Image (cartoon, rainbow, N blue to C red):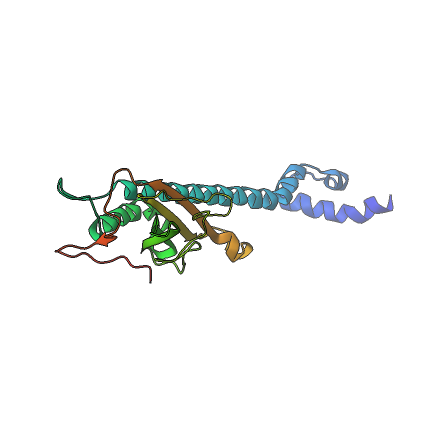
Length: 231
C-alpha cells in the first residue's frame, strides 16, 4: 500500500502529460516494448554476422577471379605465336603484351594492375636435360617476385610449381607457367586480416599447342614493342 501511495503523484503527472489514465500498476507491468528491446540487443550481432558473410563472399569471389585469370593467361600464352611456312613460329614481345592487355581488361574490377602481378614463365628442358626457365615476363605493379625461379635458373628435376603439384616440361616443347599474386583489399574487416591472409596466389600451366622456335626465346622485330620485364 505504501508503494501505491508513493507512485500516485507520478501517475498523475503521466496522466497530465499523455491526456489518458495511466495507473501506476499498469506502468510497472507494461511489457509492450519487450520485442523491441530484444531486437535492439541482437541487432549488433546480426550486423556483424551479415557483414562478415558479405566479406567472405567477396573474398571467395576474388580468389575465383584470380584463378580464372591464371588459366586464361596460360591458355592464351600456349596458343600465341607468329611465323611463316618457311620457319617455326616464334613468340614475340608484342604477343605477350597483347596477352597482358587481355588480363588487364579481365581483372579491371579488382584493380589488379595496382595490387597484383602476373608472372609468365617458359618452362623448358635445356641441353643437359634439366628443367629451366628460358624467359619470364610480368604484368602488374604489385610488389611480388616469383616463388619458383628466375630466368635461366635451373630447377629441381621434379619441375616447377607448388610442392604438391609440380609441372615438368617435355624435351623439345615448352610449358607456359603462370603465377599470379594479388594483395586482397577487404571491404570491411581490413584490420582483422593478417598480411598473409590478404595475399592471394594462383598458378596455371599449359603446354604450347604447336611447335615453336624455342631457342630464340622471345623476339622483338621492328617495330619493336615494350618489353614487360619483371624488374
